Image (cartoon, rainbow over all chains, first blue to last red; front, top):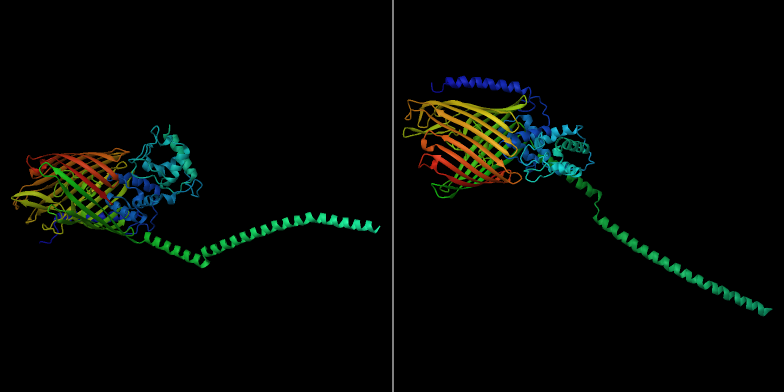
Length: 208
Length: 408
């Protein structure tokens, strides 16, 4: 019979469908979003996790695009498209979007050292590991092209504290880097104490 | 006695007059000073009055302030609406212009291509993606093609279900690296072009997504589609057309997928498999086995990007075909690209080896290139290809290309 389902198709299609439905059902319990609803409570994207996901995934296929290249509303479909392309999870999508949207208007984040940001309440090391490590790397040598090497003699850490504090606070464009570091690394929660703490960690860990 | 009195009276009057004269003079001076002060005050008062008048003319009334507040509120609402709509529309894409000069043919501006990509998204639930290719042909006519069009349904955070015409998820180059602003060289690796070793696209349904495993991340894609068709001519299988088609003459589907893992940041290892049936367009009943195997790897470390890929398509024999024998198309490449930071120059080297079913299509190629990245998505490429194919065939001709590509 012409329209009969071939044995091979049947043998593959049915288990495939069963596997897919099972996978969808089982993973939805751990999901926050999607048409099946998930937990029903979709959390906001996390800027720090987003910075790490952005740094760990995007440069694998193409050059890193600066967050300032697009507006908030434009980044949304771009990141959704990249979720499909790169096989990211919904949470990674939301985190990366939060990071890009927080980092594409540095002036909005730019504040004086006496600002009223709540502060992270973290040590300099923890601030670095959450906010800075995505681009600067665990060893301070830089994780993406164009990021300055903190460990290099005569490098960024040869500058005086005042200059570095200003650079961290208001953002900085390194020569040759495809993108500027956003104000406070894109983390608006950082206050003056955080900036001083993270600079102390940089000097202690990479400036020797 | 009277004389004395008169004299005394006269003296007293004279003395009084003498005393009064300086007092009068002092009173005049005080008067003048007072007058000057009054005049100065009058001037100042006039200035103040003028200033007040100007301010009254320039100052906003309470009503005007209220109007401005209302306008700001309206603009703020509009701005919020603009940014927070349920549906968003976005246009992306890329284009390129290419000059080629190969040994066997005269140099020519050989390509002008525009690939708009449309995104329509509803919340985080549904997205429609479509890419067109608009390109100039040899004869000056314009090619217009649908590269892909899918409706993506985000089932949950780990699973996306999509249907339509999609780029083949087998391997990396065809689905993620072929856009000219991403590809580090003006040409595709040997065997990764259309109708060669790597499947280009498929029409059907696909599930894809990712999930964390320990400290790593895994991604997957699984699909079912109509499958490719064979180009058979003069008793020989010339090519396998693995591009999405709306027809399925052999009444058999192809199943396949890819599993990828990212063991380290900016790295990925992937395995691809597909299986099904295939037949020639003119002989749909002469079906034969169709299988695809692939593996790919990529690693980016600071300024150095390394990647490689292997892909093989093979078809079995069919006694009912005018070309009864089996056939295979196999290719691999390895590529390194290094960015000379802080300059915008980049060096690229790639080796690819394509083994086609028709020997004159087979090619081994060394490609060397220098790129200049104006921006992360706009680059000029200069490349030279050292080709080794069947003697006398186009596959054996060396050539160079200059290309400007821009992704937006």
